[in-house]
Image (tube, rainbow, N blue to C red; front, side, top):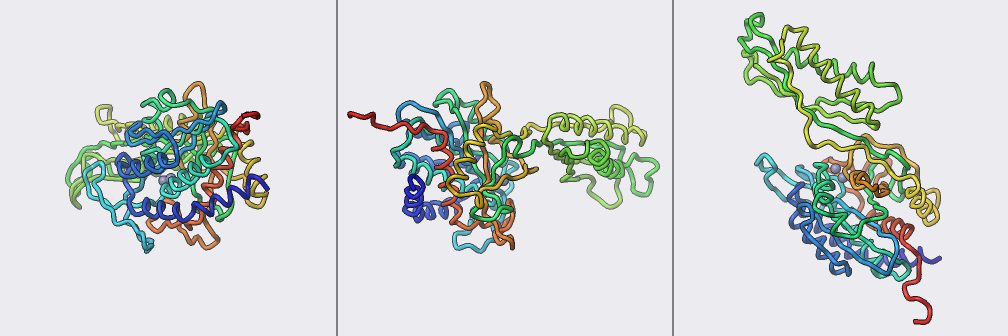
Length: 417
Ligand SMILES: [Zn+2]
Ligand SMILES: [Zn+2]
């Protein structure tokens, strides 16, 4: 039964302290870019597990390295940031944290995306792998900040993640998934999550009195036409079967019932799997926006202003050979009833960026079920999201099995010593 019985025993042994760690992390969430306490906590745990640990990599990033002879370098990543939500789970370890967001506004903070569970699983895997003698190679455990702003991975790379530390031959990560039943691992080769772009569109007009629309050029009516026309891009221009989403998530214009404003600001998000669809959506958004403005008599100085924001994220693509290797290890260990090939999701994730730096590092990102038929734990980014804590065991075990599938099985001590 080696090695699975020994991993199970280690998980049972570690679980009480991982649960303590999880509850501590859950009760002290920090926003993207503010993960000071969290990264210190993760750093201390990696040090205690025997990893040479460096803090402050690309902001609050943490890197722990453990080498056992020569062999593959495997990076295991967990994200560390929380979200500006007021927790309503009713859990005894509910977060009561508040902070100021990037705009200076006071907000509540909550781990509503499972990153607390990912960190506990990372530490569990680090401890268990450090205690096992049957692998050779190098482990690089990464606590990544600012996943929710899809900026932490790029900042860690820019700060030398792949030059100051051993360059990975493979990188793995996981995410909890309420839409998958607890006890099941979801995997997929190729694209596993969507690319996304955010845009600001300022729709310009000529303000005036509400009683005299004929003297104005009403940008509110223009904005309404533009919002509806975007959905025709999706239904009539994106080829059937391709993913193309345009969401106008925020509309701001005007300040009074009887005054037509000069401008309306639209905050727009697009999602896609293929770059061709991204380009199609962006070109069509520009064409439709300008065309509608022109039809209302708006001329160039007042044409809509479209700004593509820096927080763009490419689709995440799992390396087929690496993913098959990891999925085979899961199948061998857990059996076909617990390992599921899943569809890609329209959410986005910046772990994929670790796999896009030349020469490319194969990545494998998989999902750990935490749901049930009644959706007891709630959905990601909901202020009621509360995955069953026992999922820490599944997640830590899966990271150990995935890492060992990639690491060498060479004996640590050569015969005769
Ligand atoms: Zn999230
Ligand atoms: Zn997340």
